[in-house]
Length: 180
Image (cartoon, rainbow, N blue to C red; front, side):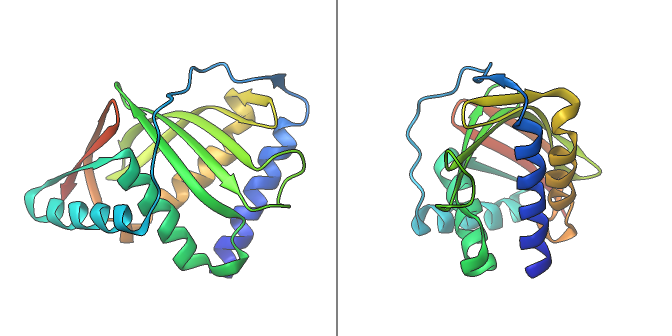
């Protein structure tokens, strides 16, 4: 856990360094749907995933997915994690929007990092291709966010997360094809 906390902190520093000299504002239009993060939603996501393992597919809402990520991170990282919550919005064509809320004092000027990307499956794991990242009114795109993208995909490739054969999104939900 300590290694993952340090890795996460390093990625946040890399992202902030990348944002230091970049353009103002986000280029993407963000969804305005409310997402509830709660333990109940996280448990509903876990139930959907476990049921999906037997059925071969799982469908999660934005609240379930966001709650699952946030609660899992909080339970496994303890008090040292710099992340408070992760909100995830899904749009058609595998488009994903993520807002990472940091604990107070982690970053000067604000407490959120915004990420925009597309989901796919690579080597039987969910993969994200980040197209844009932003914080404190600044955004970066392209090669500048490649290290952050590689770090996220490294953790998504964890064999403990199961075998994913396909992924698709629609407004407000993600569908995962799960292999045995």
